[in-house]
Length: 116
Length: 112
Image (cartoon, rainbow over all chains, first blue to last red; front, side):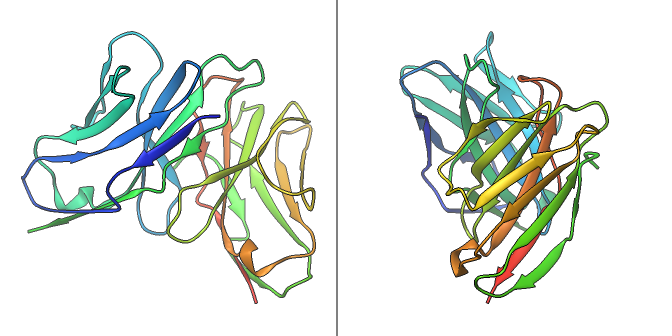
């Protein structure tokens, strides 16, 4: 089975500062990795994903994450955050070779709070 | 807007009752998954349906059951409700096995 550990439950940061949200995973098979964002009272939105190829993946709103197989990590970073980035962020992992489609295993989430 | 709609958005039940939650998938999506998100936790996979057949299940008891209809809409049924069933229930759909998952905004169930 695959599992995810998000090392920080809350991350407070000032506007325009850089941020890193940490994610480590555990799996005995090859995996896909995801970051989802959840704004208050809303469902989950895919932020970015690693399926294969380049280990550095980027989102359209300035976030990036790097797949590090040796450290089993997929940390999320942004060089300069905005107030609007305040949300709950979930790291998720799934098997990459399931014939029946893949189920996502989520971490417990990291609450990013951006203040002026 | 993800094109995935869920109903009802909120509901309150008492222990022992039964509940049905509904999900309308994004057009063209033939795979639907259900997740349970307890307060302060990440979502947990309940089960998945592909072309009306369950093809994956998480660690949930049989009193959690589901259906997928020919139009790919879906239901989640929970019998004999327990207090710990209080959670946000999320539906997600995608095309095939490997496409991006699109989540609805969820149905928040409170069991008293």
